[in-house]
Image 1 (cartoon, rainbow, N blue to C red):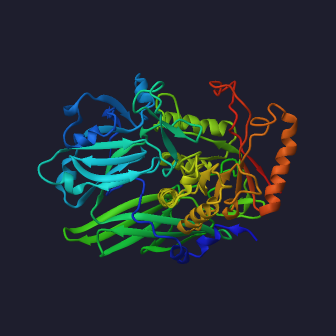
Image 2 (tube, one colour; image 1 turned 90 degrees about the horizontal axis):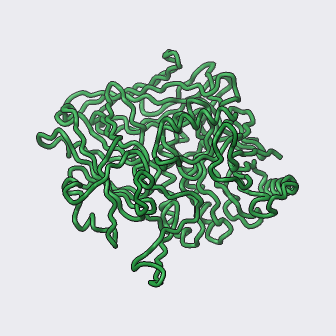
Image 3 (tube, rainbow, N blue to C red; image 1 turned 45 degrees about the vertical axis):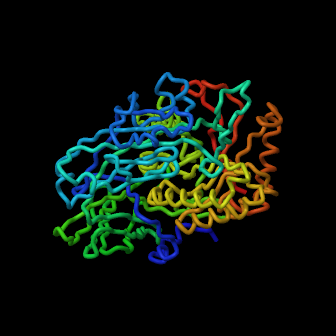
Length: 565
């Protein structure tokens, strides 16, 4: 009997009873008849705090007045990492606080209409961020890669303002309790290092880019608004089942209307109220790329809220793309829509020249064209959640995603502390809240290559995985291991075993003839011990840096191999 995730959807309202309630929604800002958005991408004023304690900006309260008044600034593109934009070697490897600032001109209707709610949204700020608007503290957030926002209506709707000043301070320091973890190493030998010299030490093999990596924007809603939507799907014979739950804010006197439209704009199902189930006869399913002649079919869930407020009637509209599909796991297979799915894909990164981890549409489309060119149907977000726009393209193109949190480099015993655990749980909440409605996301990954043989790892990963399943009972959960099957204390709690192994690279160098035997032995041992499906999540052989460009040379460490027993 499959350990199906899709079967949860058939339970309808019972699903929402067992799923944990996340505080506040994080719907992607989409324009609608009731919503507007204003992009803040472009050049921002920027300064790194090179003071010894990295605290000059707070001591002098740089956020209270325009940044240029307290000293020289640089022009810094947003989104981008700050590390590679300039020619200053100190900035490339800078660790500490950096400051961003942008003056924003606002439409009069935003500042004068008190029925309008104005929200500042930061797509990603790596790693710890503090935000001020007109010198007033509005938000703090720990962790890169995930969005956060602040309602700034009262600040911009007070007095004859037509503009506002947004200041964001970001600290990229990693500690044993951040995600990913790191340590600060102080070099005290004054014969070798200047006084106060330190470096950031990390246990992952990619550069710790920092800055405002994803779009920063302002968007509006009515004061009574749709705050969150949760959708799960299932299939009963040829009928598609779309279970929905809608959370609203701002009024206790409201009505909700829900319509599901096909790609031609025809209404195929409709309902009312905050939760329910839409039934779609002869539903067209969301299929992965190359698994069906018509992959990645998306319906549109249109939600309309009408409400009474103290300032009169109002209405809010939001449209959510919906793919009807099921996910299930057996002892040896991963099933999508009841058919065995073979993960044939890559481990990606968001890094690129100059931009660092900065979001770039041209680079994103190049990546997707490469994926389809090589016949890939999936990728893992190694080793952090990717931009929301990436997930949207995966939905549109049928690229299956293993959605991984920034749990890479969890090596030290200190990184299994209660402090680390609580932050890890929070990150999973934020990631599930953001990505829960993407049909392309079929599995959550809570870590990559942790020291899962350490004694605290068993309780740690049992807690994180259990929490993630409570947040979203509709998807399987995994983490990626490189430990021995006999000593791994976290794998008993996963639904799918993901293994990284580099035969003839880290040992038996160059002896390709032993790979097949060692690989087969590995799979047989894991499957015999746990009776779960296995993904070879990483493998490869040594390559030459700089020769990873098409069409002549393709990089290693990219292909996944799915093995069924």
